[in-house]
Length: 481
Image 1 (cartoon, rainbow, N blue to C red):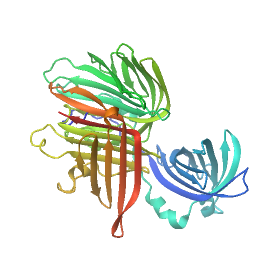
Image 2 (cartoon, rainbow, N blue to C red):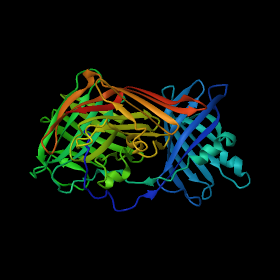
Image 3 (cartoon, rainbow, N blue to C red):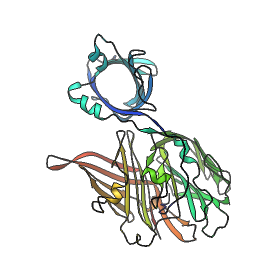
Image 4 (cartoon, one colour):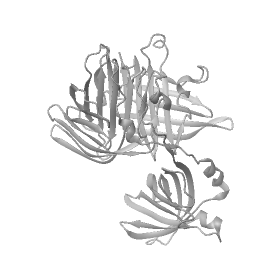
């Protein structure tokens, strides 16, 4: 990843206005009785539900769900996920199928609310369910929506976000102008081995008007062993409608493949986007050249399946968390820091802090763009808030250094502190060449550590709202000149 801090002139990603979807949060409490036990366990299920369309009250709406399930003395899984079938009138039911892990076992909670006009409240708030393992029943239970404490939060959680096709954001932005750079990059963490992966694809259009070229690199950060990387290209740039293609390397919707260093490094990964696009900078800055930067994620989260081979060793990954991102601009920043952190349970944190190369801006402290997507909502609400504050006051602050850098800030009743550590033995230094020929150096680690503390002001004091600690699973970078 490199931070671009100058404008772009590309056209919009899509000429079609995105449709509206539906998102909401729901909490249910209840009990579970396992077939091989003679006692009842307490259960709490917290879900974030999202659909790609507005709810169809007279029809059926399919929706995704993820969140956390807690079963007393047995399970606490923040990665529970599944689907809902919302059909209160057409089929008179709201069905839930949620998969989670308990005591190392994959289980499925399957049940539905049977909607009836004779008992409207009870039928919409009571969920009897059966618990299955490998298709065999292992228990039964009942969950209830507590109207007294959860009705208002439930109603307030409803959102109707624009649903955009993540694949559309992989299309090249460059339209032939000199002095531009465009990047497609992907970072992945293999949950089985702890290894980190980095794939960087870049188009450079030199400022002197000479022929554009494509290049990049691949790197693997093993948990035990030195960082290994290799470059590919430079190669002639061939315009593609769907993504990046050069020198046998491809970054297309749903697929990342290629090789470097004569095949010493090879990769073939299927990419599955999860969630909505995440705009680190204001959404309109990706479409219009009004800010000196454009960076975004086609989807806030993604998972990866496939193989990555280096020096005769093949790493096979399954459902590995990660993300792909896009950059378009004139080159690298004077100084920058970047973080992508999958916080679990569908929560994601993305940070870009940079000092511009432009005269008059290069003497300013780093401008911070921070986006925390938590429980289906993104904070701060406006992406320019951390960078601009209010009339220049209240900007978020970044202290960029190695091996440790920090970002702190406050907006509204919340404040955040992020500490990132990039150990030297897990960090790779690479040189970048800007379109004007100037040089920059990035120091990247796909096995960084991070600590994130989110606090909320409550009755005269700051209280912890959420806290995350990532040990070797954060993706981070610091760049200098």
